[in-house]
Image: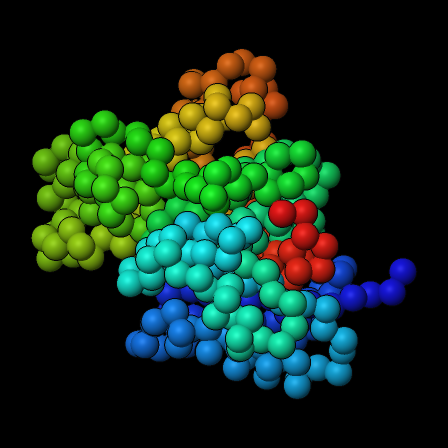
Length: 318
C-alpha cells in the first residue's frame, strides 16, 4: 500500500507545533514556533497558514490535507470554536473558514485533546483498544473519549470536558463558571489549593520553602522536593492523585471504559501520584471494572498532537 502524508497542527497557548506525518504515524518533518502576543483568530489562522506552507515547501512529498488541533470547545463539523481557555477573546469563531482562506489543501479541525487521543489510539498506548479515555494534565485537563474506535464528540463538540467534572461541590471557583472542578485539584494550579489541606505544621514547612507564597507551588517544584523526600510534598501529590482518581472513577462509572491513558507535562511525575489515583478508582468503581482497569502513560512524546491531527486528515474516524 502506498504511503500517504498529511500536515498536523497542534496549537498551544505559547507554541505552535507543525509537522508532516505519514500514514504509518512517522513524523517526516516537524517544527515548533512561538505563538506570540497577538492572538486574534485572524492572526492565528495566518500564522498556521504560513507554517503549513513552510512545511509543504520543506518536504518533497504529496500532502493530502491538513488537520488542526485547537484547544477549547470545538465543533469540528461546523468549524467553530465556541470558546478557548488559551484564547479568551475567541467566542463562536468560525476558525475553519479562516483557515481555509490561508491553506490551499483540505483542512479539518478538532479539539486538541481529541487529536491527542486519536494518535494514541492509532499508534500509541491505545493500539488494540476500541474504547479508551485520554487525559492530558497540564495547565488544565484535556480529555478525549474514544468509543468503538471513533472520537466521541457529543452535541456540538462539548464532550470530553473532563476537567470540569465536579469533585468538590463547594470547592474552588473555576474559570468555566462552576466550582470544585477536577482541574482545580489535579492540574498545574492544584497545589495552590491543596496546600491548604495540610495540617498547619506541614503547611508552614512547605510554604516556608516558597516564601509563604502559595502561587509558587508549581507542579515541577512540588515534584522536585517530593523526590528529595519532603513528606509534605509527598502528601500533596497523594491529594492530587486522590482527586484525579475521583474524576476518573466517575468517567468509568458513566462510560464503562476501563482503559485510561494519561499524558501531559504533569504525567512526568507519574510515580508520585499514580498509586493514590489507582486506589481511589478501585474504591469507587464496580469490582469487575476495577479488575479490568488499565492506567497507561502516553507513549508518543511531545509531538503526539501533530500525529493525531495529521492522522485525522488522512483517514478521519471523527
